[in-house]
Length: 281
Image (cartoon, rainbow, N blue to C red; front, side, top):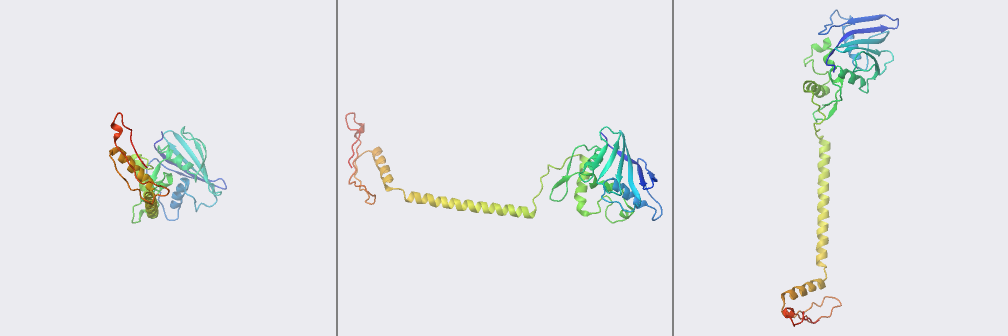
């Protein structure tokens, strides 16, 4: 596994074939000089080679070549300026990295650069205060490697991104680089709108269940009220039979099509020779 690298050389080639070369060392490199001598342009060129969208100020230049050295070999990375191609061409002597074209917008190039510091698999980091996550990319923390002179005198830390909206993602990336723990499993917090909608949906569900329960209760009450008195009378017969004895019952006249004057029951079923029961309707 590759764990580190450094930029060994930076070349710019113009339309005439002339090459401008800057050699760098493995360590801190300080670019200094008089105003308008190209210091900022060098920083911008390095940023462009690390995936920035545009590069201004290099007139008549066709492409840039950056040589990266690792403990397992070298990479020569070439990016076109004029055509503004969204990819880089890589020539590699490192076994873990293939030579070829790497798309920038699809994070293929970012994944290659992450491999140079030992990150070989896609990782997730937090991107905002709601704990929503995003993929770890090289651009999130690449500003650490090239600091412009205008950034040095700003009141806020030069480690933080220029745009405050990127602070959470940047700090999360540093935390990952320290502890190597993927943050994709951290549960995201609900937004206010989502939380409000969820609570409203829950209220509506409970209200509907209350209405359904009330309707069911009313239906059961009606069924009990409308239960035929004939069934109630048959239950009365059953209990009387169990209890034994003789009893006259006045049948409610409201039972339709039922002419019954008396019901007689006894408990002679207990006698071996007696009747099993006697009833008269």
